[in-house]
Amino acid sequence: TPFPIATDRPARRRSSSRRSTRRTTRNSTQAEKGDDSNNRLLGICGPLILFVGVFCPFFSMGRLTMDYFQEGAGDGVIVLILAVVSFICVLSGALKALWFTGVGSMGVLLFTVIHYQMTVSESRMLSAVISIDWGCPLLFVGAALVIAAAAKPTAPRQ
Image 1 (cartoon, rainbow, N blue to C red):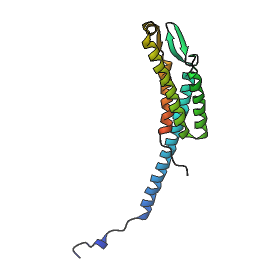
Image 2 (cartoon, helix red, strand yellow):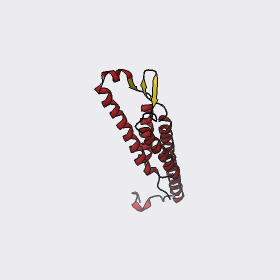
Image 3 (tube, rainbow, N blue to C red):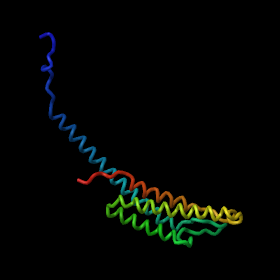
Image 4 (spheres, rainbow, N blue to C red):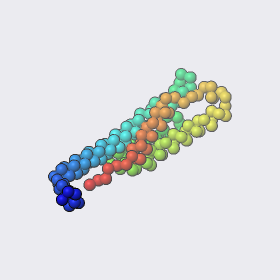
């Protein structure tokens, strides 16, 4: 026949489609393992930064610096406990529990900074003497990493 008929199509080779399916499955499995290891890396770095950040300079008064642990209100102790609990959650694989510890750490830090701003704004003398030091942003980065580890989707277990 001069005109091709629909049934005259060449047959597909099945072996190549199986290979591509295997290749796609293998690549997606590797990507899922990579995502899970990224979550664990974020989950380990965040609590470590929080733990170290508690002992870094939080407030400075001239040459005198005060870390978050010495701050006096117990907020540093709370963040320290939340950092240890976060680390335990990461090691046990309970990454969704990091929502509680990450948001809790961020809330305590925000409370401290807002309280500091309200106290300093009442007195011109305090605002000239007391300032927030580099440990404060470090703690916020640690809390954000803990929240990021909780928010990032994990690979389904098989």
